[in-house]
Length: 258
Image (tube, rainbow, N blue to C red):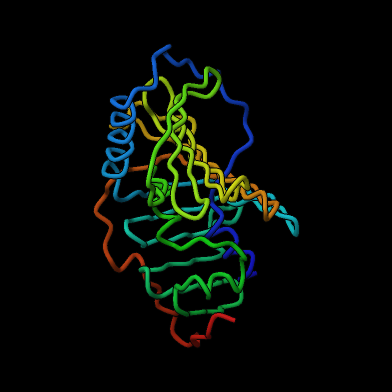
């Protein structure tokens, strides 16, 4: 059960719903437009630093299919709390990390686990190269940007503005913007191989700036797809630091994460 939870905790991303056609103005991909898109990407990174609310998580994985409702508390750079709910709305699994320590509690059998929130520890359960900090930034509409040495921009009438960032060693990233300069996708490649595709959809225009309520991730090399649909969220709330740690109930021993 702990293994299933960590899959939920880490892969809270990627969707399959059809998307409306993107309308993009017919403009030349100039250096000035590249700077405008990079500035838009930077504004997104600064807009949201925390979130709390509810989410419906669905995961398709070679070994299992999972679906769960969760309560989420997220704060940059690497704090996360997830409470997985039963169909009756009661917590069946709680997990929290402050970026250094990961704690997991299963109320049904009163099992409490604690360990370092390291990539190595996480990968004992889910073999994907995703730090907690990366997950936090992705959910907060701030997809990680690779170190890049040059850029290339093209206009795709079906997708939008496609800004390619090229790094060293064959690493590159595509960032796709719609006609309103909203980030709709971030795709990560090594040479010609796609390793991760992140998508954003269903924007809430009542939030300032508009914020995506559907976050997607696809990892073709792992044959994994997942989606998180947010609802009743609050952006940038003041979340107490204690929210990102768990204390075992009296009489429950602390076990190492297996």
